[in-house]
Length: 458
Image (cartoon, rainbow, N blue to C red):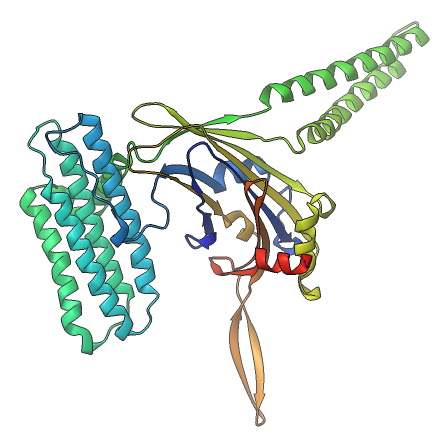
């Protein structure tokens, strides 16, 4: 379930069906040497800057052969129906192509790479033909089609150029490479023939890139659900702060009145005592408020996402988010048992961070032909790598009285336990070891799974 996304981020993509509830818990074991704690990284900062969540219609783990053609023809449906089905198709093609490009690049040998790339090219050609077969005659629908066709053609070209640039090269497959390059040239010429982009835009790399980003957002309209965020407990926090202030002020006023009764005149001693009393009030007010607030919000969700259809404005789903630092003793028993199975040298002093997400789908059904929602939760580990040491070390080796050395980089390990709950009787446990350096995630390895737990229980 947990897989790498960008250099310093990973994603989790569960599927959601109508009228279902899902809960996802992540328990991070962060070594103290990484210097991540409530003082250096607050929960609010991590949530606001390093966590993203969105929902979209039926695009999870999709590959090019599985993309569906669901256009509304020119004689059927309303304008929004056509646009939404067009966007759904283009969105799925984009995600599927991205996934298949990554899979193809995993082939390190040219003998495996080029046949996979040619097959991918043929599948992509078929999907583009399917798109262009349904060019609408209605002037109101034509702009939607042109935007989608323009973006998809450009994205396909860029994807295959990236594939050829990063893939292995071999003179034995010059014909296949030329065929792929010819496909890219044809898509470029096609956009020129359709006059999709002005010459000034084409000559400026920034302008054409920004235009395509805009078109990408346009084809996500109606596919990616609109999200609104609400910070929970904000009024409760004000009440706690006000109550603590009132109690402390009442105590301070009582002390001040007693001090005045003991001093008939205003003296330097009275002024000093009053100054100390008010100083202590400011010191203890913040500390007491923080302690009481931590005790009250422990175990309570801090944020809520509302997801709505961007066209119909119907409420589709809601998501509650928990995020807090905790201690090993407060972890669930099953999670503690999983962490305890680490090797002794890996049981370092650590900071514990708990993330939880509870998603409830309110819709009874989705768009026709789409049975699930794809939920994507992205976690950036950039703040975890902020305080890591730079540079490389050296490993020396003695071979026949000759000393050799190799450069080695500094690496750190995070341990993460994932708990996925679909229903009361369906809970999945997995442990991952995330190896990272200052610039990227080096490896994500699944160490512990549900099967291991069942064997332990036997």
